Length: 449
Image (cartoon, rainbow, N blue to C red; front, side, top):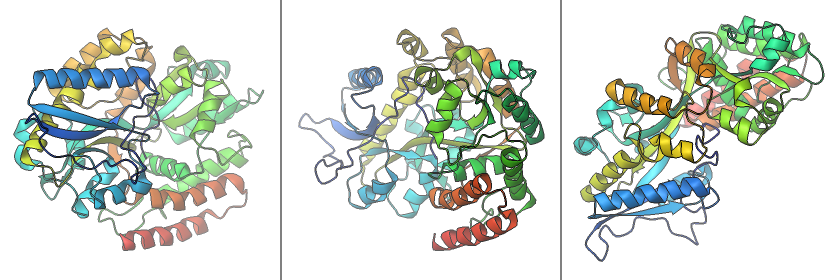
């Protein structure tokens, strides 16, 4: 699943109109009347996100001034990509020349033959070699490059420092194992007054998403390396469910209300009634700006378990009908907008700070080497959030295996939702049977491709 907030003004970016019959999003003619190379791009912030939209428009204007032979035509709507219409847009020739994708889309778009091969043009993208290899690999299929990463995130543990202190826990030593998390959650819940120690999602596919993250944290996998079989009916899978079951029913540290989704949990954390939950760093501004939280109280730790963490993110792919000129123009645009350290739509931290957007969150961390050093230097110079609260996350992530979501993620998450919700709503849930049944359903999903 995608990360759940947007790190500037916290309104998700948008895509081409979903009303395809009304608004066509297809590739326009390559050349405008003036002889320029014309490219359509999506994921422009909606008008409701006034600051982000102004930044986006300003950056396009500066790009076109530097490249007077290129005409960029942005498309906006919400969301950036709707899974319900994504394939239809591709198949119907309605997709922009340069289009937004989640990491989990990359291989699928290639498999249905809807992506342009960017390999011959990579020399046009100045920043490509500076991007983290593991992120580049996501858009590489059979040795060919079909997309460019734009942002990345990894899951961690958000916790309330004030509640830790009240419960007699050291806020500078967050739980490093699931046993430690369980013990901390029990102490926090003992504070009473409606305080919950640990909360988790269990509906709208979000429970399956978190089950996957928790399984990765213990060194497990959802599917086999060849993508053909479920691998959840394992000691690691049982440990995930047993821990949730015991926290819910033995410790009473997860509260009585279940079938929660992200908004529920964010509201609990923002109101100071929740000790811990799993999320990416971009949740923190949402907790402050929309849910009443305080930056000083909110800290971030790496995933408990010490083995791995789920990563996600997004990038851009190119329409298979795009001409060589459009591909070259699109790559130049990506360099300008998103891939210049300390500059552009996502990297101009000085501009973001002036707009009272949060600067200093530990992610996205896109670059390596000198490019990363420059990006982090500019970010640090403009930080307006307590960066010390996130140091444990940064340090701990260095030793974790970064693992992308499984294939057919949303279908698999729907199956796993039922497993997680059963454990959290039924005290006598049969964990072994739940895993066995879910494995069979996932095997069927994988067999259908």
